[in-house]
Length: 185
Image 1 (tube, rainbow, N blue to C red):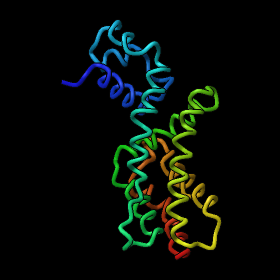
Image 2: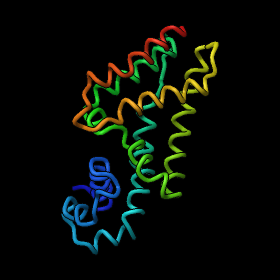
Image 3: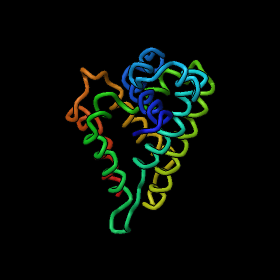
């Protein structure tokens, strides 16, 4: 049986991912968790606190694992990055709902400094991992700008509404980026 705190965080992650922060109500969270209100408030003081913990304990580790650019040395660093970009297409939930970090970033960062700070930490870490990977490719281009371009393209490809999203559309959108990366080798 899953501990109550973990059950709450999993439910909050799922609901906020699908419905957004403002579209997720406390009653939705309580219903999904099947716990009394008192139990919820035993662990968290507010919805904001729950979502900030979700960012720290669910999104950060998930993004870190997803952007794990382990390279056994047999692959060109750009091929490792291309594999990661293509891997997104195999994640149906990502294609359907987009990047959960970017969704929260778009919704909450402009209006709440706490969210902006929590999301920025993850974004900077993710960007740094791409820059380190690209640094091993000995490119004749600015790896900082290229890392930004990669993130912007992937997030942009994932920012369509669920009705407009598909694996094929995602791959069509990132193909020019992949083709460009290939030319850098």
